[in-house]
Structures are given as structure tokens and as C-alpha cells.
Amino acid sequence: MSLLQADIWRWEYWQGGFWPYIALVIFGFLPSEIWRTVSVFIASGIDEKSEFLEWVRAVATALLAGVVANILLNPPPALASAPLWARAGAVLAGLIFYRLLGRSVIAGVIAGVVCVIIASAVYAP
Amino acid sequence: MNAGNETDGGAWQAPPDSSADASQRSARAYFLDGVKIAAGGPTLFLGLTYLGIGALAFQANVSLGLVLASTVLMWAGPAQVILLAALINGLALPAIALSICLSSVRLMPMCVSLLPLLRPRKPSIATSLYTSHFIAVTAWVETIRRLPEMPVHGRLPLFMGIAHTLFAGAMIACAVGYLLAGALPLALAAGLLFVTPVYFTIALLRNARDAIDWLALGFGFALAPIVPMIFAAGFDLLALGLVGGTAAWLVQRYQRKSAERAP
Image (tube, rainbow over all chains, first blue to last red; front, side, top):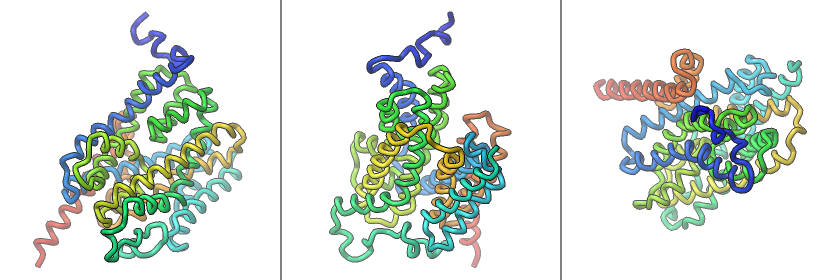
């Protein structure tokens, strides 16, 4: 048996007592938290008015926009029950309600979510 | 759309600290401002996401304690979804760890852009690590534009107020989602999953003021269908952020240069 197929890499191996929590730390917490830890050291020397910071903020904004677009284009199964045009239209509806109702984020989100619920109820098989 | 953002709309309003007493406001007062900012929409939206994560944990057949521990330790919704979905599908743990690692790259530009705003004095490493642990998308979109306008001593307390309120709401919602799991009709499940994209889209537009913000947003959306064709899955997110963000930054730089040269 090769090292990669060892039982130790299977979730079932880590059952009982505190073992699931130890697996969570090793395979969940550490791979995620490493980016925050690295960031603390990168950020430590940066002035808040620097142009580097402006660039990082633009990268974060573009990345987040990409994450959102990706959810809309390749949605998880339940969300896929509303067709693409309905998902895009619901975002648009959210933005319109946000603007019309005095820049209320809650109003925008509720409007968008209601649109998707209706579309899903109508178009789901 | 750019000019009015600070003054109109309740959700975006800065705490009333522009008057002369700003320097006398205590850390406690700023913390409570943060609690108030988070207690409405942001905690509701994040709570709905964590409702879904709780339900997913039930399907994954892990204990309530474990999914709550994952919320405490990871504090990154997408990474937790990856973990739970992978456990349902019986993936090997190193493969799960790799997917989580690639997904959480998104935290790095957020932490690097926010942390320099959050240090009144030279903070200890422990304080910085604790602060960075609470940086995730919701806290980032609610603070990245607010903090630079605030007095330096109020920023960390305000951020902590927001972060801990979000955290408390997420923990409760996660437990509720776990206990209610399975009772959700499809259309409502679709609505739940739609909260994140519509909330972040509105919040990003609300935050956008300078050309660079609009460009980064536009490039991010425009590149989303293209980038996965060029870059391997997992790396596409980082590539998209780097390409879109750098392009936006370069355009703004070029515009500024030409503005300086013009008479």
C-alpha cells in the first residue's frame, strides 16, 4: 500500500474522542489560517497611505467580484434550480431596490433573494 | 454615485465622530458602534450562510461540536463548505486540505489591505494574529472603506465590535441550521444560497468610490468566465484577483499621470 492510500488520510480513521478535532486542526484550520499568518508579516511594514496598499485593495476587490460572479455562473445545485437569467436578473433587482430605497443594503438583498425564491419555485422540476 | 456615499443611506453612515469630541470617545464606545453596524444586515446575511453550513454539517454526519469548532477555528465560510462537502463525498484528507488552502488564498489580500489600518501603536504579534483571524469577507466589506475615515484609536475597537457580533450570530445560526437540517424546501435553499452573491455585490458597489474600485469590480466580473479556461482549477481565483486588480491599479495610475501632465 502506498503512502498516499494509507488509512491515516481517511476521515474515518480520526473518529472517537478528540481525534476529529485534531484532524480539523491539521486538515482544516492550518491550511486556511496560514494565509492570515503570512499576511500579518507582509502587512507589518506597510504604511496605510502607500500605493502598494491601494494595489492590494484592488486585488481583493477584483477577487471578491470574481467569487460572486463564479457563484452566479456555476451555482451550487440548489441555486441552479433558478436559471442563469433569473440569477442575473435577481442581482439587478437587488441593485435597483438598493438604490431606490435610500441605499438600503437589507432592502436590496431581500429583493434579490425573493426574486430567486420565486424563480426557483417556478422553474424547478 | 461616488460623491454621496458617506452621507446618505443608514447602512453606510460613519459613527458620529466627526465633531470635536472624536478624540475623547472611548474604545468601548467604538466597540459598541461596531456592534451596531454589524447587528443589522451583515449578521443576518452571514447568519443565513451559516444556517446553510450547519445544515450541510448535519448531512456530512459530523457532530454539532465539530462544525462549531470549525467555525471558531476556520472562520471562513467557503473553506468550511469545501470541508463538509468533501467529507460527504469521502475525499482524502490531504486533497481536502489542498482545496481549503487554495480557497483561502482570498483571505490574503483582504488581510494585507486591512491590517495596516488596524494598528494604533505597534501591536504585538499575538494581537495581530488574533485580529487577522477575524478578517473574512463580511468584516472586510464592512470596514475597508469605513476605517480610513476614522480616528486611528477607534479603528481596532470598531473592527472587534463588528467581528465579534458577526461571530456570535454565525455560531448561533450554525447550531440552528444543524438542528433544523433537512426541513428546507428547494426554493428556500436556493434563496439562502443567493444571499452571499447579492449581498457582496451590493456591498462592493456601495464601497466603490474611486475609478480603481469600479475598474477592479468590473474586471473581476468580466474575467470570471474567462480565467477558468486559462488557469487550473484552484488557481483561477488568485489569478483573477491578481490580473483584475493589477489592471485596475495600472489604469488608475495612468489616469493620474495624464492628469498631472495636463495643464
